[in-house]
Length: 179
Image 1 (spheres, rainbow, N blue to C red):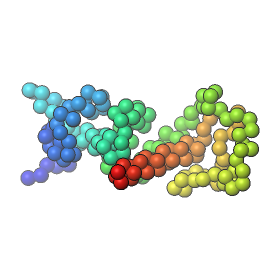
Image 2: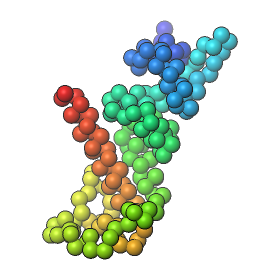
Image 3: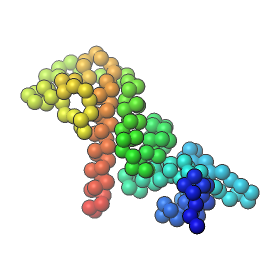
Image 4: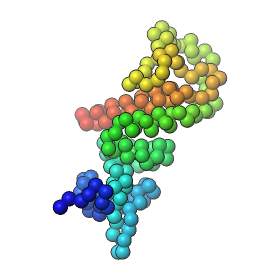
């Protein structure tokens, strides 16, 4: 008899479903405070469905995408649990929605990251006229890079950078598979 999707899972069931040793799950509990299985008498662990979904996302980022534990911790800090849950379940629409919501929060650039005068002239021809868009994100084709003295990344530019990051990670994953 198979369990309901809402049922709690033991550590052995989670380990078997995700093809992970049980000691790895215990270790991840020490590194990722977001993984909080319920513990019963004798220390027996019971994982909630949302715990299992989060572990799937962590596993995907560590094993399939090549992230380090620190890298995944940073992703969790910056984007929250739902981001990794969406990645683990393969829900690209949710990943993009979370990324766009994060991009809506504009981040001021540090003084070192401010563009210098004259950098605009370095862009010539087509690159200056039409910046590249990834996956159709961004509103207008004429919305260019951060302007000197602006001090903030626009929502569109953050979305472009996020998409470029996803593209690079996918390229890395493909290259790792070829090796």
